Image: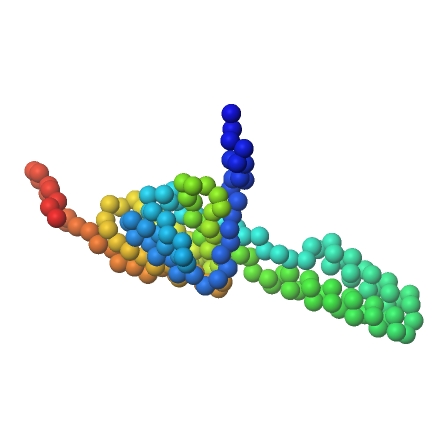
Amino acid sequence: MMAANNISPQNTDRPIWDDTQIYITKNTVKFGSEIYQFRNVTGFGISRVKTYKLPFQWILGFFVIGLVVANYFKNEMRAAGIIIAVVAIICLILNSFWPEKYGLKLYLNSGSPLPIFVTTDMKGLEKVVYVLYKFMESNAEGSYVVYSSDRSIRIEGNFEGNFIGGDAGGKVSNKR
């Protein structure tokens, strides 16, 4: 039998819109006042964030209403119709140039809500995900700081570990 309080929705997201710094080490992930154990992070990914725009049908409707009012009414109403049509054109232009939002999504073992660090910088976001993927795949110690803002996202960090170059034969051991 399922517990009555276990009805939370899965796969809900929690967008984080503020300028944020995410501190990542092999042991922890920290942002704001929240700290997670790194082993509880199941992944990082790119997620599209819903961008609020005025629906095209509404803009078209305002434009048509403005044209009808401007052409079939007189004087004051004609000016109001022209203003409505111009506002509809301005809204269409704003919708066209409004940037798409994406986010660095942090997947956790605990489920929802999943934090998403919102940005419009898709190239920077792809680079951050690639660097974090390489970090998760490695056994080396290191730390990274991800700087996320609305217009950009970047990663800085240091990577510590042992590197063996050349040909090795026999037993290889690592003593600390």
